[in-house]
Image (tube, rainbow, N blue to C red; front, side, top):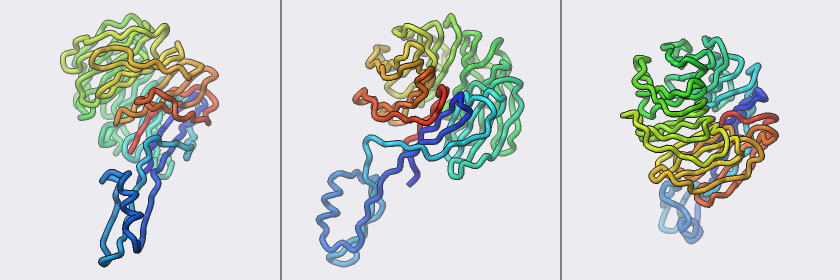
Length: 343
């Protein structure tokens, strides 16, 4: 059974991988079926690995114990970047990191070995994402461009030009059709992944756009800015759907799911908003420094956030309860990027 993962990048120049595995219970040659049935009461059918009747009395069974609140431990520290790691992304068996050293590194999650070093940008790499099938990496840079890289050849397939200032954040649609970018020039741009052409330019923010994200159904874009607002846009039409206000300082990080929009700010808080109504549902306040990065699990149950200033830890949150469940320590400086993958 593959583990759940949290991946983080920091100004301390490292990428760290945190894992949480499910426990495996096995029953071999069970003379009395009662122990098996007792455990079955607490499991879903998805957790059962094997059960077979040996004869009228004896059974074999094995299944995973369902963990409702995963506990992560650091399992890998990936070193090689010569400057701070601004962004990380994980997809299938691939981990990608982008750095102030102007390079993108591609690592094997299974071994921690470096498989590619992608060079082409002339300045900082601010953000990286991986396509759904791990065929492409898209990067955003302070050199005002985005690049689409083939993970087969390790070469640049497309260079996207249009932003007039550094590109701070990039997202990719689940169906690998669109790229969305946010820039220092206060615009959000939507691009075609196949042609590299600009489809539309979204204007409304009055300051730097630090973070953009796409909903899993490829319908909504969310953006966060130093104008202290979070904005929700239609990917299809480009219309502004809603402006979320409540943070008292810059919004550094955003994420979006089927139910929530989540934002992290220099005001040291995380706000959880209803995607449907735009209302602020929860305010999470454990961070003692700016919330520079965050990401949501695919089931909307968990959130992982990374802090800056003196608060260079990752925090794991149970969104259902609105409670912090774990603090992950290891980085020695600001946590600029996190990605979360729960199996």
